Picture (tube, rainbow, N blue to C red):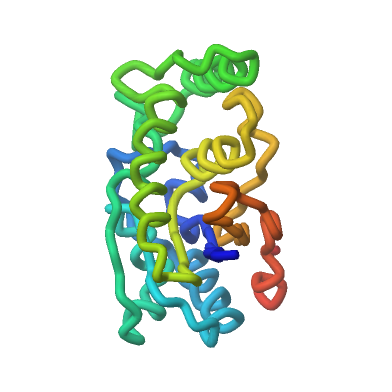
Length: 211
């Protein structure tokens, strides 16, 4: 039975993460010192895993998170379809009390099933899911690759994990996603089905005392 194993990780911390500012797909932020340390810790634990390909979004924070794997010569493919959700006109701005209430109401609406609702100038979960499916299809179609590393983003990861679990998108927040958390996935080609083997694994961060 032909299978593919996917190590799916979220990027390391940025200053926007640290300050609680939404980045989305419109902010191409670098990792901060904590994020670089997280990426280093991930590499220390998983650097010997024989990945055949590294996939990232088009945003630099994912590239920097898996940079040491790429520098080893592992083939790297950028898929813009894996980019974070667009949070629209408020991306990159220090949130006001009103902004925080706006986002809280937005995500609450999503959890209640209104998954076509989008932030002003941004994307809805349904729109993100549609492009993520395109990116995932490209990864799956490379059936000769049996073990790959995929680096992407928090909200997009939650949407993707809900999709492959056949859950309604309103349940996406059931998937926790710390910076550099690892989800191990297995895809069975014969059954066209995913299995989540491990969830939100941050054991590599224990040495940093931030896990």
